[in-house]
Image (cartoon, rainbow over all chains, first blue to last red; front, side, top):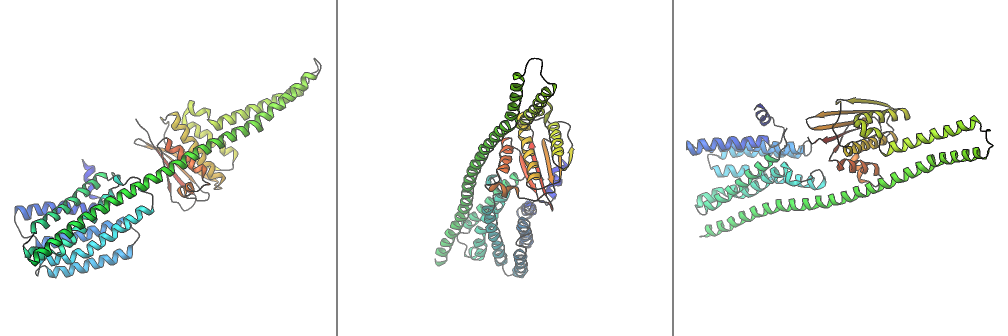
Length: 192
Length: 255
């Protein structure tokens, strides 16, 4: 069974690094946060940094070689906000997450817009149901659009202690949609 | 209390964003599928009219071949025979009989050509590979062109319909390369991997965009190729090259 192992490690598809991140994060969070009950605030920061890299890689490879300048500028902005947010961890983890969320969501919205525009411009995709990129772009679009206001208001929601679980359910639903769409997308991917 | 109302409103805003994002995705899907369906309908209409046009042209060509060649030859034979019948018994000249024999062999040649153009007789008896070899031999004889052929398979297990459609598509493609592209070099190869057969055609003539040309009203031959290949579920892909054109036809063989 050497074939699937080899394929999984080759980043031929733009989504592969993000899928790996989700897989490793699920494992790590499951073991460290739930079983060992250790503080994961620094892990959250590492996760958000790798998340930036993988999401950026997805759109960069998806549109390559187009929009190179805009994407690189956005990447610089993402790195800057990430560095700023790193200094905010000790003040508030929620604020640190909020600072990171805005440019990443902007990248996702811009990327989704470009992709849909390209889709309608060219007639290359015959069946959208069978197109893995459609599932990945939709997954990112729904997840980041829904979670951005949640992360922006995270500190307020947490401190007010009101409707916390309702917001948590919205977050869980968004995560569930993300993972379901990613799973369908991977399922629709053709063998390398 | 103020916080509670604010959070309540915010909660509904977030829920609305979620619904909005999901509806947007669904809307993109519905609109795109609708558009694709409409385009496919238009495409199939164009292909159908291309098929009818090809059939009309074929009939016209056969009628012209029969009228100009065979009919002309038969008229000549009739003329010689009438002349012979008018002659007295025992005075028939050998020279006149030779004339009749020559016109008869010309007629036979013309009929063979018409028959070959309709459906090469080899196709059913000897298969696609030998027919293609014979075809390339013929065009090599007619035009001053260098044809390189590579056959990485000994024989192909194809139905008569598949062989015929593939032959006609390759014939149309190479004829276009010579007549419209002014190519003087063509390389052709057949290879096989797993359950797919690949037909690679490359020329050094004038480059053209196959799919753009298929959209124009002039590209009847190209539409004909698309129609023939879609009839047998084969796919044609054009590869960008510095000079000339490169095509790959892929056919999946069902075992």
